[in-house]
Length: 631
Image 1 (tube, rainbow, N blue to C red):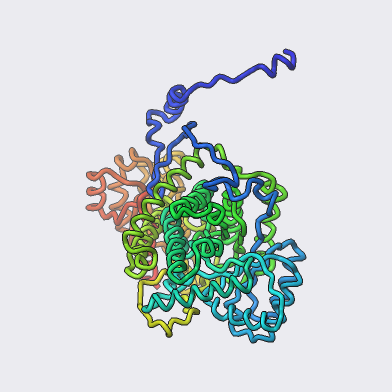
Image 2 (tube, rainbow, N blue to C red):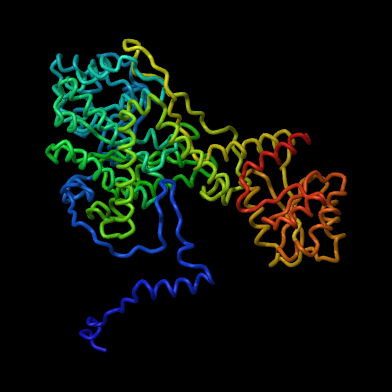
């Protein structure tokens, strides 16, 4: 066949009906609809997405779904905003020099750690930072008033502070994290607006209003709640600014939004695309110039999804999350080191986090592509559904009186708490898989101490002038925290005993027959720090083999029977009775969810419980309680 003929060959389009018939044949009787599932946002995910009628949208054009620049990162690379956390400004400058030498292109540090810095030190710090000629990204976390005061003194001393970027804070969200809001709202926002105007006059190229959606993310919010709160907070600040004499355009031009990205890659990409669209639609509703509502986005990898055990898996999580952030089109990105929740981050962890930026830019070539997700029917559909759902929730928040009122009443906190509980339950039942924690856990991994405890958020904003109004605090959480508590409880029992704690698995019939459920039980107990070991296959007419296995392991008080449904019907009842007669046996379980009649008969025989796919890992707490009482 000649090249010309090869070029003219086309592949047939089988169509949806042919695909569906073929797919259902491979599903062995199940329908394609059985593959449909729902997200925490109550968005339906389908097994296949086909081309729909899409409105033509271009990068850099309203409503900015595809990005705020037509050239993407070729016009402006994303800011590598790895936050430096030194408490002494000289150490900070030294670490910054090292970071810049290794490729960091944005100055980002925790100013709240330097909040007591004196003016002479601040002056030297600002001069040194100015010399580097790099943009800033500072989350001031409630210290903006002090930063503004020092900046004003510096300018009076004729220090040039021509910074670009952001030195911003989200005063509402920071206050709610500490469980307090100002009672005198009018005076509070009057002073805030004056500070924004003052910063605008001192450093006009610096954004000073942060909408910190990551606070809601780390409390457990789903993507729709994050988006709705981000938009609602933005509207709240716009309205408060206008009430206090700032123009709509000035207020909008001072805003920067911060989002956290979790490990749901496509949802993360769609969330950022939907955020830009929503904010552009807000600007359109105000009849404002669209250019003022080009959303600038800072993204960070999720602390909510980081794990304490097998923490090197966090490298994979953060790389995936950073990939989603860059694909979604951000301006600044912080990748948290893999050990950030367990201890002060080591140099290796910081280096790996920083280098993920370069892998995405130079090896994945993402810096050359504008909106890589465009044209993916799945991502486009998710973007549309997130936009619609977030807009509806935004309108509900507005009916509550806006973001400030919804937080004051605790309305939004309650809804976020419900989602967190749902996520936690999914993790405990291992529907939400956390590699190295609730699945594929390393039973031999030991930790000398627990994860670093997060301090209750300190109120760095001085509200004494405005009066304090207690509200329900937004608490930072982690998805793996309850699972880690179970694991730590197991380790404490091991430490008291001086040896491992374990469960014996009694396999029925052949290895092929009992292995699937034995593997499930092994993974289940490993997630709780309990070792499991199994017998050889025990036949129906060899009950003495089961007795020998149980008797020989006199240091084990908990056993679980594993086999097929047919094996359970044949001789599980007699086996349970025999095993429960052994003196040192405390509990006998069975793997799998049994029919009601069989379950009742086994219960009468002495069975203590069933362990199956719907069993929460909280069940292990009961086992640990028994084991702890044996000490």
